Image (cartoon, rainbow, N blue to C red; front, top):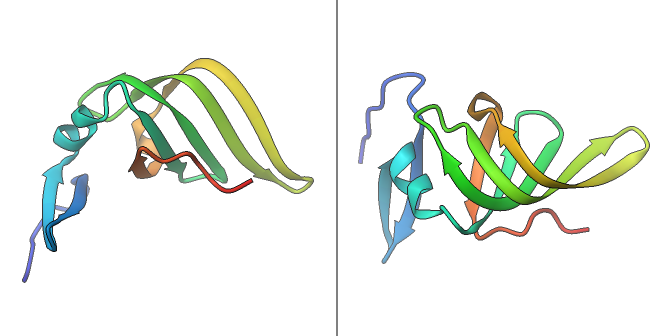
Length: 102
């Protein structure tokens, strides 16, 4: 099976009943509003929080956030009440994910 997607287009893939389903980014992210989500960033950060909302660029507002960052000294964990996350820096979204193992 071949799928052609314009360069720079964000899509999400979900496997349902053994079939691969492709979603435009906003359709799948919309299903996650109000749920916990694990986000892997382009940098050495991973973020877990409750998704409150997002825009067309997949910039996200999250609450009850835990940020995991790898530093030369080891892993740093930061708790935040609420953040606005730039969608350009997101590599992967895991709905229902609880973040990296501690």
